[in-house]
Amino acid sequence: MYTAWYLCEMFPDNAFIKQLLADKTFYITPTINPDSREYFTSVGVPPRSGMMPYDTDRDGLFDEDGSDDLNGDKNISQMRRRNPDGQYKTDPDDPRRMIRVKPGEKGEYELLGSEGIDNDNDGLVNEDGPGGYDGNRDWGFNWEPAYIQSGAHKYPFTQPENQAVRDFILKHRNITGAQSFHNSGGLILKGPSIEGGGAEAYSRADDEVMNTIGKKGEEIIPGYKLVTIWKDMYTVYGGELDWWHGAMGCFVWSNELWNSYLMFYDTTNTDDYEFDRLLLFEDSFIPWQKINHPVYGEVEIGGFSKSFGRLHPGFLLESDAHRNAAFCIYNAYQSPKLEIRDVKVTKLDGGLREVTATVENIRMLPTHSASNLKYKIDPPDYVFLEGGNIIAGMIVENADLNITREQKKDPGRIKITNIPGYQKVNLKWIVKGGNKYTIRVESVKGGRASAQTE
Image (cartoon, rainbow, N blue to C red; front, side, top):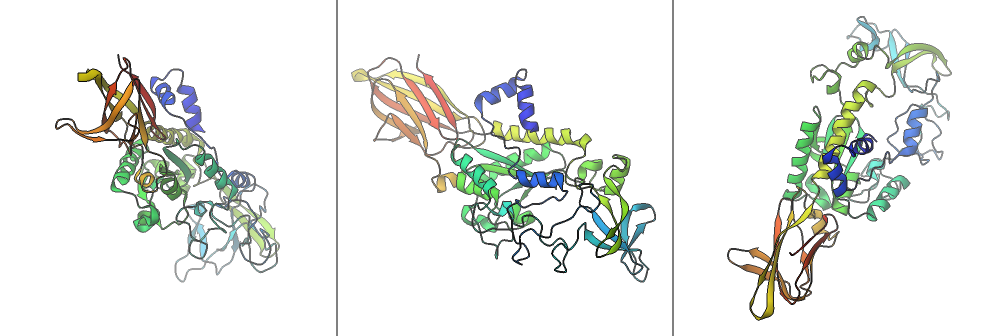
C-alpha cells in the first residue's frame, strides 16, 4: 500500500515518477490471503495457511481445536506453570525472560506452549486450528502432492485466492515482473526453488538479471540479503516464484520483510528484550498474568505480542516500507522499454527505396526471459513498416559486412524472437512507392513504440 500511496503522492511533482507511470503500469494487490490476515488481526494467531476448513489431525473433524485467547487480549501468547522440576526459571536480570536452568539446578517453571485448551478432548492442545495447508505450495508449476511437499493441498491452485491471482495474470500478459512480500527475515528471495531448477532452470542470462537486480536491492535495503531458495534455504515444490518465472516468463522476487538487524542496525546485537525495553518501553511484551486453566490448573499467560518479530514497530515501518517500495520501483524501471532510432530512407535505382531503422531495448530486462522462450509463453516481438509496397524485409546481422537475414514471408511484419536488455536490432526494408513511412514495434512485455520518416 505504501508503494501505491508513494506513486500517487509523488506523481504531480516528481519527474521520474511521472515518466515511470507514463511508461509502466503497476498492479498492486494489498493481500492475497485476506481471510488469514483478518484472523491474525482479530484472533491473534499468524496462520500461514488459507482459511478453508481442513482436517489437520485427520480425525474426521475440521478446525475443531485451534488456539484459544484465554485472557481476551487478541493475542495468542505463551503459557507457563510453576514447577520446581521445570527446565526454566526467570532471568534475574530481566524477569520477563525465561532462561534454561543449568544441569542439576532446580527450575521454577515449565512451558506449556501457546494459549489453548483441548477443545475436542483427544488429549492434544491446539492441534487442529483453521486451515493447515500452505498457500505457497499451491502454485501450478513444479507442484508435488502432500506426501512429497508438506503443505500441498489436493491439486495445484486449490486455494481460491491463488486462483484469483492466476486468472488476473493470465489476462494481463503485459506483466514483466512481480514482487511478493512475506514476513519475516530480511531476505530478497529468488528462484529456482529446486536444485537444478526442476522443469524451469534459469538460464545464465536470466540468473544474471536476477542477481544484478537483487544485489541492487541489497544496496537499497540495508540488512536484507539476496538468497536463492533451494540453495540457501530449502526445497520448495509448488512455490509462487517458480510459477511466475516458469509458467508466465516473468522475473520475480519475494522480500521477507523485517529482520533483527533493524533493531540496532547491528548484526551482533539482536536482543529482543533489550530492543523492547530501550526503544518500545516494554510495549510489545505482555506481562505474565495468572489464570485458571481447565486442565493445567493455575497457569501464567504472557510473552511477546503477536506482531513482535513479525511486523515492524511503528517507528520503523515507514523507512522499511519506503526502501521496499523503492526496490519495486527500480524493478519496474528496469523492465523492457523499446525505442525506434536512426530511421533513414535511401533512394535506390528503379524507383526503389531502402528504409533502415534500429529497435533498441534501453532497459535491463529482455522482452522475453529464457523460460518465456523455452515454453513459447508469449508471441515474438514484431516490427511493422507501413507505407509503399514492401518488396523485402530483413534483420541486419552485420552492418559492416552487409550480412542480413531476410524474412521472405510477410516482410512488412518482421518477427524478432527476443530483444535482450541494453541490446538493439537493426532492420532494413526495400520498398517501392510511398513518400512517408511509419515503423512500429509491438511486444507483449516490451510495449509499443513508433517512428516516422521525415
